[in-house]
Length: 528
Image 1 (cartoon, helix red, strand yellow):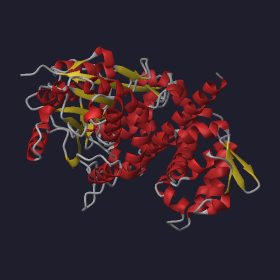
Image 2 (cartoon, rainbow, N blue to C red):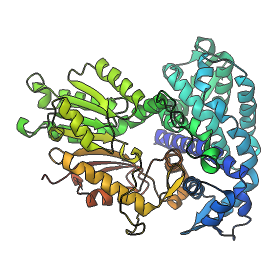
Image 3 (cartoon, rainbow, N blue to C red):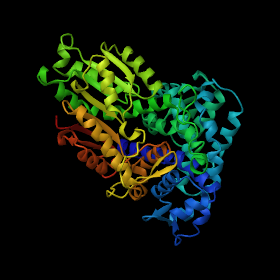
Image 4 (cartoon, rainbow, N blue to C red):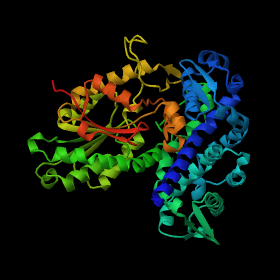
């Protein structure tokens, strides 16, 4: 029980850190534009249209930013207006200036991994040490939540850098001397000084070890990675909000500029392992059927690093009747992804895993008919595959629903949605989601679709449960990068309307409460 309490306490701190990574640069951008000058007291309601016009904001991203402040408990909202809460009034007295100072560190935090490893040199350490000294002094603020938010801008990138450099893995095995860590020794010393002050590490002369809380956070360090991977985007969030929302997302070679995709794939693979294991029941049931009722293989649209495909292949091989007959009935594994980096990593991982019959191809989740054609070129019928995907549907490119009249349907979602700065109404977004899922229904009817998906929760619920949910961080990273998180009930309703029916035996949500931000569903569709 004591261990559980420690872990819950650590998770609450991690969630506060993640909120800070998002809130600090957003609050700085809003403050620099004078947005907070409109909120004089908790009795003043500010119309969104008035605020957007006066600040010349990009409406979609401004809506995302204000919803974050509602989730943080700083603002309350009605259909079209916002007002300060008592917490928001207190926060605005203490936060904007220190948030501005810490946000200025984000362009350097992007490269913390390189500085820590010694791959990059420069005048990085003095700026880091100044902020660590401020952190050790409590940032000069009394509010614990604000202190944790500010810590996040330092500790989040640090934990990712330490994990990706192998330092946390070494420390999980026991104490290690600083000089045994390859890289910038002064940088290591500064960061471990902060982690020691926060109760996650111990310093004994020149050796470092992890406390019990530190051991736990080391195991879940990848939980920081997705949010930290978006630091390039948060370094320009002011431009997204109040400047050119169409700034380049990729360079001339197709490499993404606003997200560190390699870090994102690493983090997603680590964080998703728990959920992938829940897919096992479905996989075992399907591949224990009579062979004539089994799919020829598995197709993962949005395959990322290929880990889900590798996991499924191992489950089939080791735990099913099909696994005992793979020589006679080989299992085709197909990964499809829009991103070049992801495809390259997936190919390497599937090859390393020794999966003999595998392909990794370009794919667009908005175009299942194109996938069908590409599979046909490989001699594969799309209908003969079990379709799986993890956290991909919300990352589809925006397609305005042709012929749709805004307001024609009643939206269930409270989400804030944008495309290149333009506001997308919730009802229009849900119409788009229904049409998206409906395009897939004809292709998944024979063997089904296993779908892990990410969700938002209502901002008032997030504000009331800050230590129990990472929803605010998800909403920030995804809202400013044109990704579309809807609440789980809204997602299920849209799927049902699209002709996809969830098998109640395999439905799961994480956590198993109204705070659920992740779901697992096994969808089927009537065959034509």
